[in-house]
View 1 (tube, rainbow, N blue to C red):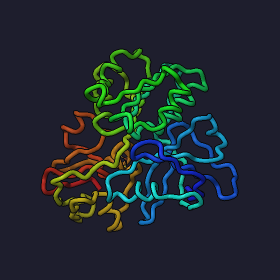
View 2 (cartoon, protein in one colour; view 1 turned 30 degrees about the vertical axis):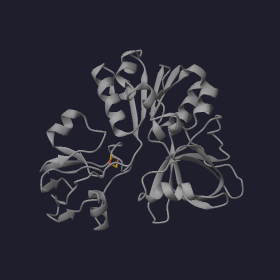
View 3 (cartoon, protein in one colour; view 1 turned 45 degrees about the vertical axis):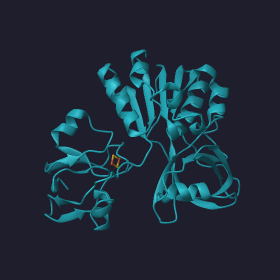
Length: 318
Ligand code: FES
C-alpha cells in the first residue's frame, strides 16, 4: 500500500493522556475511503510504524476530507505516542492505509460494543455507522475515571442512552462484561476493543454463553508483550536447523526478520492470527489474544509476534 504524506490540521487534548490528531492532504484533496474499524499506520522517526484507528463521527468515510486519530500517551520510552502527542499544526507525517482488520459484520442482528480506554476509537466509527443504518446497538465504554474518558460528549450527544459509561473508580471495579453478555440477545454481534484482560474476559464469557466465533470481534489496543522478568531464549527453525537467540525486549519476528528470514505477519500485537506458527518442540509463553485455551494448553501453536518461551528453546515449523 503506498504511503501518503499528510499534514496535521489540528491537535486537541481530549482527556488525561489522550490527544486527537486530525490529518489532511496538503492540497486539501479527498483522502482514500475507509470502513468503520479501519486503521492507518503512521511512520515514526525511528522508521517503525504505529497503528491508529480512524475516528468517524459524521458518516464521511466514503470521501473523507481528513483522518482523525486518537492517541494515548504511553509510558515514556514508547516513542510512537510521544511523537504523536508532540505533533503541531502544519507538521507532516507518513501514513499508510487505511486497512480494516476489525470490520462490522454484515448483519442486521443487534451489536454490543464494548470499549476499554483508548480502545474507544474504532468503536466511535462503528457507532456512527450503526446509527446511520438504523441498526440496533449499545455501546459500553469503560474508563479508569472521569478524567480518562475521551470523546464522551460527542458520543453521548450523538447516541444518547445507547452509550453507557463505566468509571472504574466510581463503580469500585472493572466493567462486568460477563453480565453484559448474559443479557445480550443470542444473535448479537459482540465487538470489543481494549486491553488484553478485557478482551479475554469478553471472549471467555461469550464462548461460555454459546456465541459463535463469528459473532465475537476483537482488537487489542495495547502493544503486547514485554513483561518484567523476560529472559532470552532460543528458536530453532525446523527447515534449516538455524538457531537464533531472542533476547529480552525483542520479539521472535524482529530477530528472525533482521536475519533475513521470510515471515508472514500483520498486526504484531497478537490479535490477528496471521503469524501463527506450529511449535514442534518446547513450551511457548503465550501472550496473544487469538488462541483458545485448548490451543494454548496444547503447546502446538503460537503467535510469534508477541509470545515467548517457557523452555530454553523452541523448535518452530519455519
Ligand atoms: S502478527 Fe497478528 S497475531 Fe501475530
